Image 1 (cartoon, rainbow, N blue to C red):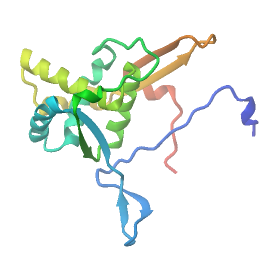
Image 2: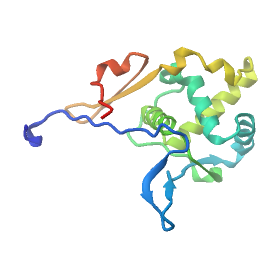
Image 3: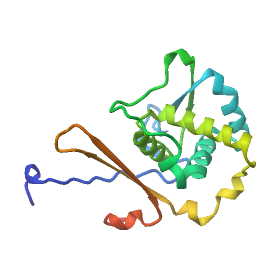
Image 4: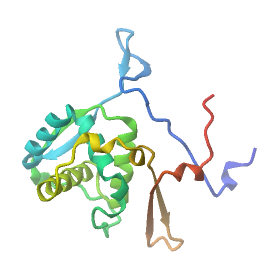
Length: 192
């Protein structure tokens, strides 16, 4: 086996939980399997009513996140202006942030994280951006229903985010590819 110090390339894969109610293989105090830990989204107080309307419409925050990502998946690369900063931009604390805990689908959380990194903002900040974008779009254009997003084009879309730091270490290049053929560039994993 080749010495790891001499390698100039590395890849790793994290498996995402598939079942919505999947449990971790970790036992709690009463010998029951504990569920995956919840994730938090911090929402500005002024956007809470908008979010609660979406939650009421889709049944839960998990479904709301799924809808917002699915609706915007084919245009994630061009929704917002890119950040010029090298640091991640977070929401301002003066916004009186309200915590929403939920158990998102692992794939949706990973996709949210990738898109947020592409734009140089925090996960929570990007979610609020999607929420505001959807609200503005709904007010200006047609109403879009959940059923419109069950077609194959969206189900088979994959996202690839590439980050490259220049050799002079003064620039970071970002590239995002949204396509159904992204997985062809990577070796298939065995299910064994």
